[in-house]
View 1 (cartoon, rainbow, N blue to C red):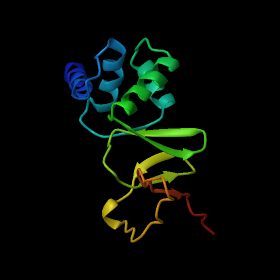
View 2 (cartoon, rainbow, N blue to C red; view 1 turned 120 degrees about the vertical axis):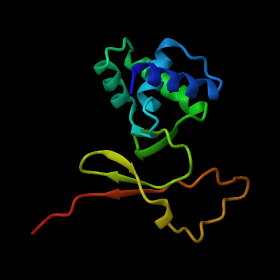
View 3 (cartoon, rainbow, N blue to C red; view 1 turned 180 degrees about the vertical axis):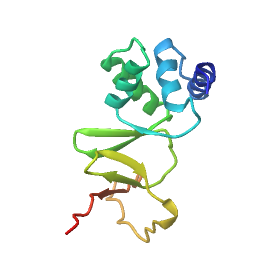
View 4 (cartoon, rainbow, N blue to C red; view 1 turned 90 degrees about the horizontal axis):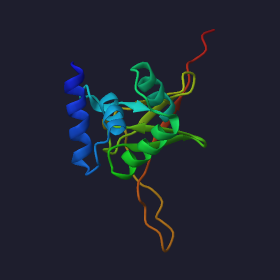
Length: 142
């Protein structure tokens, strides 16, 4: 894949959500969707990838940009730990595995998940979404 293709994909991704394609947004978008694949990431991992590619971007800018991507509906936030957020470029409803040993988020097979009933929302509230995160750890061999 050429950098030009990744930049073009990133630019199209931004414009599809009516986000202005600034240099830094395009650079980060190209890292996220430039190869045409969905990915899970943290703001810190995206910052590290940007630095590896020689992009002049601050961690604060990455946080602000990821928030803009969320607000525009380009990525979804998946909260795993109280203070740790992961993000997913696949914005369709689907479950996740969180690998505790490696602190990695991956997709879980949606076709194997069955939720037959959820509690009704309290009066004056509505259910916005149901997030399913299945926490995993490696088994200890004996």
